[in-house]
Amino acid sequence: MKYIAAALVLAASAFAAPSEKRTETCTFGTYRCTTPNTGIEICNIQGKWELVGDCPKDTSCQNLPQNGFDLPFCTANKVQARNGRPGQSPGESCSTPGKYDCFGAYAIQVCDTQNVLQLVGNCPDRSHCEYLNGIPFCVASV
Image (cartoon, rainbow, N blue to C red; front, side, top):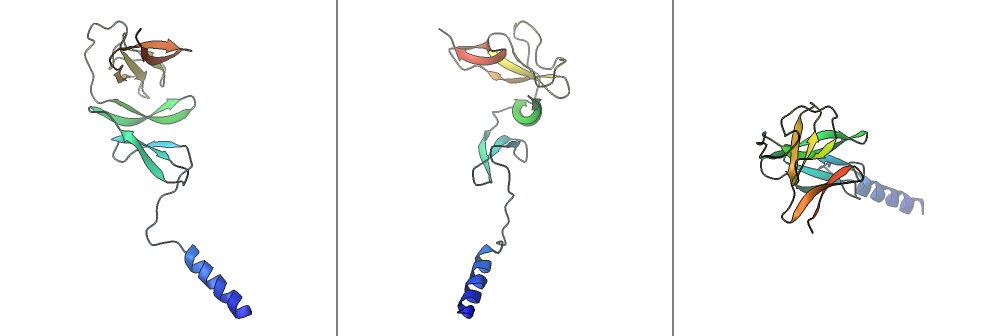
């Protein structure tokens, strides 16, 4: 009987031994930029990184402070022209890192960690930027 128990313990330890291919574990629900910074990943329920999506063309992933945390956002790689939109434009200085604002009526921008406005993106067709509870969102135009 004790030989059977020893054999079972040995078999169980063989299955529990780490495999040669080790994967990085993470905390479920956390986000990060991919390496290189071309997209955003989330830690899935199994504790493994999973691609959420690639950043759009002419953007890259940067960690920006948001609500007390550093979170990954796809931000514009280059400064875009004002295009007649009122207010500050991407590339101009700002005072509150992590603060989002409407960029005119049809886009959203964010103040990055270097206090420079970055274009987050344009609103889709038939939508516009509007503040909901103080946060800019692209909402359907009626």
